[in-house]
Length: 322
Image (tube, rainbow, N blue to C red):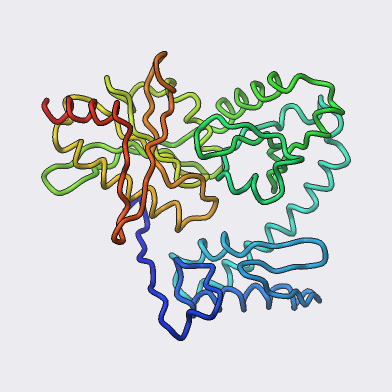
């Protein structure tokens, strides 16, 4: 299967008093991730205190959610190697960050490395918004200007832009153009929906972290949308799913919409680099409405319920009627 499904584990009364920040793992699994991470630092002479989902080493804070999400689908005996590789990559990235500090003031050196990356809005809310160059292109996400280095993706600061003496809009436009040209996608057509009522879901993925940025130029991919546009999911940094809204899809297509909302929410919560748990209605050439309209997802009775805007409801009614 293209997506790894998971079930959230219920907390029992005895575990309720223990911070359970990795709710996609059992409490026992969470503790194992914490122990492996602590061991990695202790073998290198550090004794970091453990917080709720992070380790503090000096002035630096190392989050554990991403490595926990990476471990989740693996067999237990592969978790030590996963943790080793995760923190090893972070250590390697520190040298790239030092080079950025030394060379990044030169715009000619920095410019070819610029990219536009979509993040969850909490990424800005966690104290980064005051210094990190960002804007909102897609509702409930954050588009950040970054430098794509060999082993790290580094945020571009407001101060750095000032040193470059370049126009903010022009720099963002250059970063997006380079992202679209130099960070290609791999597309896969996947049968989706209930047996006998399946439709085609288009799944875009890549090894880089800029897959979701391509939603800003979805018109480049005419095969993935129909006469009513498309529903798009941006669950994590390496995945974009697109369901074409074509009249020919009929009732099977309408039935698949709710399943897609659940799938995107599940993947968003269970994979590293979460971006958005919601669906978006993409409409080509729309002038009367936003090109990407948020379709909010809410949890109800253990399931995700899509709350579409009235215009989308009308479009789905037309599709169901054939």
